[in-house]
Length: 163
Image (cartoon, rainbow, N blue to C red; front, side, top):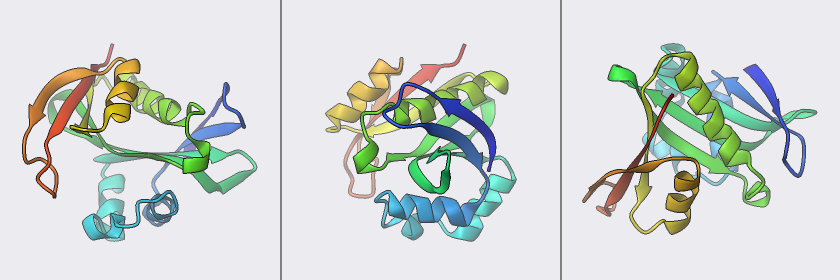
């Protein structure tokens, strides 16, 4: 893991760290409740994207327990200056403590550091809490796509311009 940065304002001490360890990322995703992750990404595929810097992963960890992941974000780096949140998940016992916001801040900072234009995310059309969360972080609705997800439900595409 690299790129450690301590964050304050949490109920507990948390660090946001960048990781390029596909095995650890997948295990963390499963532990955080994404039990079907290996159905849509293999360890080899994820590792190749991480090695190419096509995907960037951040983990929220407790400083003295770096193997215990409280949150995970994976972001795709696309052409034309776009970044896309592929995955954002926080342990159910650690929610509403600023961890997801800190993970998003890390992705936005990556965009600033690498001269990107915007960070995008798709939100299920009936995920009101998700929509409100991203709105509070400065995202706005960019559009809607019907039949977007595997179960054919629509998505709201949100974006935050990067200064």
